[in-house]
Image: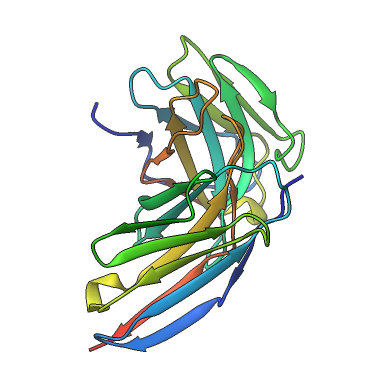
Length: 115
Length: 111
């Protein structure tokens, strides 16, 4: 597609359940980023992929969070045993990463609500 | 690691006036500084960016300035319009690594 696509756009889940959030980056973009945005707050870095590998996982808040990327394309962010504090908008972005800085394009986000 | 601070957190201006948002960063190796606009319920959209070999860049009503010595950069919006109302984020990056974002500025343009 023309832009970064995230699904679902909204997800309501019960506390303790696992959720999977999907990101389809712009075709050809080798870098992919996941951010978390709590209500009224800034963007909290979670993880960064270069190709299918994640050189920087430093932002993952706990071992309940994991992410993978396959085919240098789609990425999935998995949250296990969800907690109410996981409620937030999860944003994915992609960029060309050839060693030079290029802009990151964001998706619309997945709004996760844990009840 | 990099630390980006952004001020003010909220800003209200009258339509037609100018708005200025300022950011500072800590890592002198950062060399790419984008600004994003986020409207309610949407993802951030890039509005302008600047690289470290440039001191100022302008695009119609929007301009960004960079002072590498002082490690700060600013967004200037002139002749503000109600549709400029949004949350604005600055960011800093170095060489294909992650982007470090400021905490955002909620801009309200009063008609």
